[in-house]
Amino acid sequence: MEYLLWVLIALLAYSGVAPLTSVIMEDVPATPGLFLATLVFLVIASGVMVSTGTADPSAAVSVEAGYVYVAGAFLTIGILAYTAALESGPVSVVVPVFGLFIVGSSVLSILFLGETMTATRAAGIVCAVLAIVCSAGGNR
Image 1 (tube, one colour):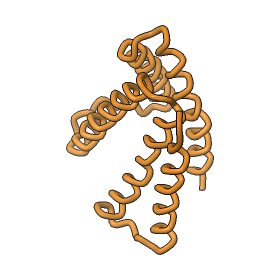
Image 2 (tube, rainbow, N blue to C red):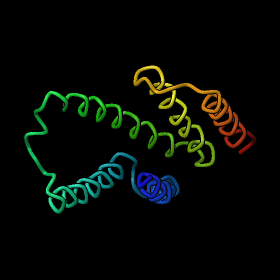
Image 3 (cartoon, rainbow, N blue to C red):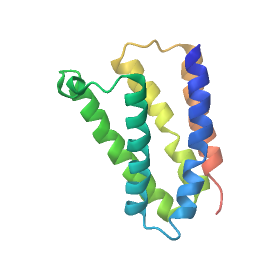
Image 4 (tube, rainbow, N blue to C red):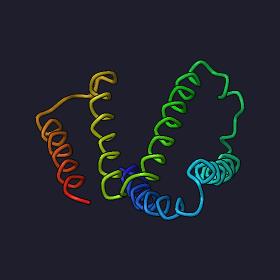
């Protein structure tokens, strides 16, 4: 259950990203802002790899690394699109709609990773969609 601690840390940290990004883009254009944020991520991630001894360059050319590169392409497209949405739309609508990635990831994991679709999971997916529709709806 150690993963629950990590996911709670991720939740708390990531909760600040959209509001900060929205405020920052009033003065810094989206693409340079995203570049600088990514630079911070690369510096910190590099430090973590070095300090944990996981900076093995052979991993970059392994067969399995192909999946990492594809995931990186999806991540890049997603973050660029998310940033563009935050630049042009209200955070209170963009973030909940973006949050539907949770439903997408759940469905893909059931379809392609062999995870089980239970009645509880199906109900959770339906509730998540309804929650997003309710929280992103309404007037500006």
